[in-house]
Length: 271
Image 1: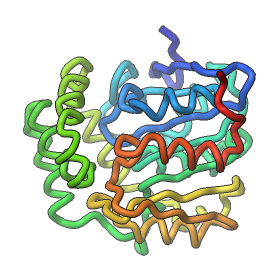
Image 2: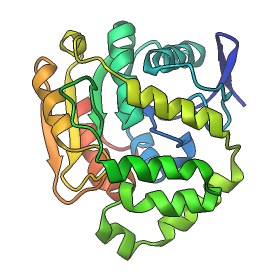
Image 3: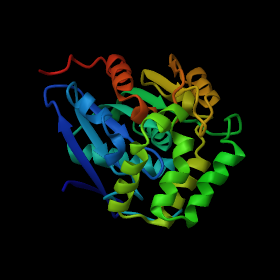
């Protein structure tokens, strides 16, 4: 299995899809490994070379305890790009992965072509914080079993209509989580990294063409954060998905992959 090594830590990654097409890097959010991309990844593989990875603390990557930030996680991503042989990629990051993607564009601009920031925030004093009930819901998971964690947080990351029509998604998440290592301290580290993320004074330096995507039914990170990002990043475009929750790539893989591919200028699907 391929791994990149950075600052003594090992990071799992996979590279798949079309070798004759542009590269697309996908960065997942809090507590989610690369196995949670579901249908979005195969949709994009028909039009791009797709690089996915497990962030520090989840999946098959190493799991250090608290004491790292989104800048460290962005440097991890740069190490994976180097190890995979992908010199430059279009980047899609969601939630905590979107925060890491911002840092990647700021710290390693030569690595980032076009950028999509989904359901995320720049942080700082002007950011709209998650509601107190949402924060408490996330904190309560620290003492829960893996199954209870997934079932407790599902209503905060998926829109109500999706939960009602596709309840099997949560069962799949439970099975996935149970099959992977879970390190509570490492997940706490991810939560702290996201909570302390603040590029509000630097985000105007992002030079990559940027699309900001958000759902107006996001209960975890309010839509106003995406509005602020689009206002602060020069030339950025904001697109709102009506009725979409926080994890809209899981909810609407067809629509999201189409929006991503169009913005990245990917070739038509092979075959």
